[in-house]
Amino acid sequence: MTQQRQSRFNSRYAFTPLLAVLALSACGGSDNDNNSSSVAAAVEVARPQDSRTFTPVVPTLNALANAAGTPAAPETDRWVGVNKGASYSIEVPKNWNGMLVMYAHGYAGTGPNLVAQTPAIRRHLITQGYAWAASSYSRNYYDVRAGVEDTNALALAFNDIAKANGRTLAAPSKTYIIGVSMGGHISAAAVDEENIRTANNKIRYNGAVPMCGVLGDTELFDYFTAYQLAAQKEAGIPATSWPVTNWTDIQPQVISKLFSSFPIAPTPAAAAVPTAQGQQLKTIVQNLTGGARPLFDVGYAGPLQNTVWGTFGSDGTITGILNERVVSTVNTVYQLDNNPAVSAAEQSYTNSTLKVTPVADANRLRTDGLRWVPKTNAIISVPVVTIHTLGDMYVPFSMEQIYKRRADQQGTSNLLVQRAIRGVSHCDFTFNEQAAAFDAMVNWEQKGIKPAGDDVLTPATVADPKYGCKFSDNNFTQDDSTALQNVRKNTAIIPSCS
Image 1 (spheres, rainbow, N blue to C red):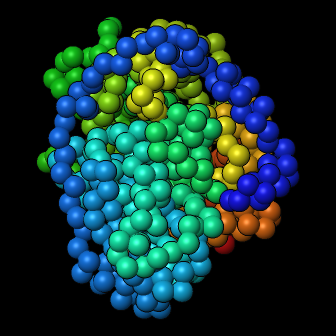
Image 2: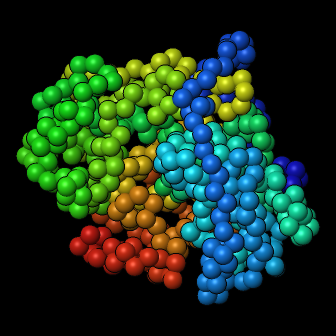
């Protein structure tokens, strides 16, 4: 966005630099330290993540060439390589429209290889004339700090890479960022004022589309912890201290008491079916993940249960991204029914459940760049359009609710549009749903026309059986997998909106 255009956009949506300053000083929390003098005095120390080694794997041009053969895809220039320790892929249409889209991929595990990934809406982007670029990030694990910095660095290197490959381009007139899952966290963090201010590789994006994103940043790990504590309590093996060092030993017993079948080896395809004893846990988890809503039952029964339970027993450092635990259940309320009001029984249940407290400043502001886990404070000055599936148990719909509350608190809700999608798993969007979200953001940023979205906070609205119908799109393209199409067509799994 040019300076003049940015000024007009900020004026239109009543966002001022003063609001950003005030918001930065107000975005508290036990893991925040916004006192500049104490931050400056802090000594930066190493963490487990800093000693891990990774190897960038350069994508093959053949792979991109094969992708370019998709029907109706225009001719492009395609470049691959390594930038600042991260592999990358770049694709620029011959009829480039002058705009660049940065793609942030999701969690890539803990392996040593760094591999750049291709956006699911690649064909849509290049057909519209957009160039796109994607970094592998220079580190795996849940390293959002690396994701933001390396994506920014690649955006800043775009013109030099093009020139080195024989194509001299003007600087992009617009640069947008999109991402899925952990990449949704990265794309939301990349447009947040705190991270723009503290990043080493500085860039201001013109808009963002976080998809199935970890928009509650460290609160995702609070959810995992609260779920584990509730499961232990409901199984009659309540935690008395944390971390739970014998979790591996007691997990089979907890599962057997709460589920008659569970999607874990040797029966990974089994549905998660609660026992009578496990029914209350299901209600608790429903409320931890966003409240009563369509498709929660399907999500709760699905294979993501195994993925979520695989996070249990952690020490709260996000596998060495931090040195000290950041998770907290201090503000967690365990609701035992679908009434949003907290009853005396629920308050008693909450009070009697072990409280996990974070280590002060575990995720404080750093002197050497971004926080180790960058915050998504919703301190934004550009349009943000999000999409999230309702059945997601791994990065639950509650992430959207947390982000909306933050935007309300910061006074930036006028720059946020959120859309609920009737998917049953994590990031299982159709091509058209993702493309529509991107187009909506771009049309908003370029023409000032705010798109429609969903109310994510009103319990009665979210619980409506038709919730999520407005922006779910089952008109499939060649980019949608057969498996996704089969699930979306199965009305026994996803009830029809008609």
